[in-house]
Amino acid sequence: MINILVLNAGSSSQKSCLYCLDEKELPQETQKPIWSANIDWTATSNQGVFNVKANGIKQHLTLESNDHHQGIRQMLDTLIQGKTKVIDNFSAINLVGHRVVHGGTNYSEATLINSDVKATITELIPLAPTHNPAHLEGIEIIESILNNIPQVAVFDTAFHSQMPLENAAYPIPYQWLEKGIRRYGFHGISHQYCANRVAELMNQPLSSLKLITCHLGNGCSLAAIKNGISIDTTMGFTPLEGLMMGTRGGSIDPAILIYLMREHNFQAEELNHLLNQESGLKGISGISSDMRAICQGIKEGNQRAKLAFDMFIHRLHSCLGSMLTSLGGLDALVFTAGIGENSTIVREKACEALSFLGLELDLFKNNDSPVGVDISSSDSSIKVFVIQTQEDWAIAQSSWQLYNSLSH
Ligand code: ADP
Image (cartoon, rainbow, N blue to C red):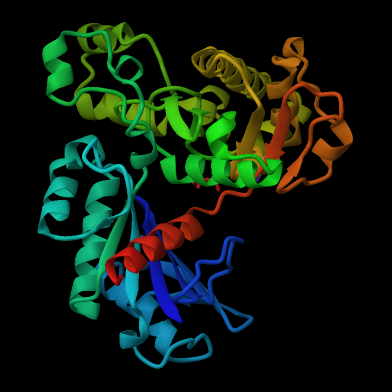
């Protein structure tokens, strides 16, 4: 057996899990980790908290400090001791897979981490200022705890790296394209996992399908996938472009920023905060970034909650249109992540805009907490799937494949 530790570091959290997989054959079905833990660094001002799950037990623990090195060490200690112990010592871990948000255009697949890869992740910090430092930190903490263990980077940008240049380039002076200002796209691990899963469910090769995957969580993006390749996506140079999101505004007229700087003396950091943390559902509703709270607000007659919801749907429709025309056809529409997997009403409204193409949702199936099933009606010209995204499993799969190719 081979033990793969997956680290998925966000700006305020650290999700981790351990998969124990057959060394010879990678299971095709999604596997459950034998241990999983989730640190929330922001729970209190000086101490993070974490949940750990293994051996049928769930524990909620407080970290001794907010120091990330100590915190990750404390979390990893629950792998080898106490009620959640699943391995005897750290040397039983064969490989560590990291989700890395930004790999630029350099990496199109999972990559063994060496000093060059670390240098690239460092160079890309200005493009992913919250995520890439957290990934580097995770890589270095693992180096210090597990010494020379092989570590693999699985990039969120990799799946979009074959996008045609005319879809990736921005119509600004060419010299900026040469300096790397282009669409990179994000959520690639999730879009790719969902596309593969849908091809399995449809029993058709991915290379023959046209799909739109809708990753609708706190962050939201769409991908247009043709013959297994992401040919267009709504997120761009950063994860701020495209759809309206929980706290991110998505696309706006860039002249608004120039106006705010010129007429209201806004500085870069203030604009960054405004667009990333104070916009989207939260900024418009004034209630919350959470779609559940927005829907509750609408029931209570809150007009700003209704406006936020209607804008979310309008922007989803606009971006669906854009992906659809990039593809020139559609076999299946796919929903995933917190909103995509759970919000019946968002799926229903999204599908309404494509009814003129013959897409017909089965409203009973849509209401029935569907996961991994086609929720379109039998007459529908386009299938509709709800897929539970499994980024950690996808990272484990890619890491396994790389490990296997290296050891043969
Ligand atoms: P992240 O992008 O941080 O991984 P998730 O994919 O977990 O986020 O999505 C989180 C969002 O999913 C929440 O903010 C909330 O808006 C939405 N969500 C979760 N459950 C539901 C639900 N039952 N109905 C509507 N929205 C939901």
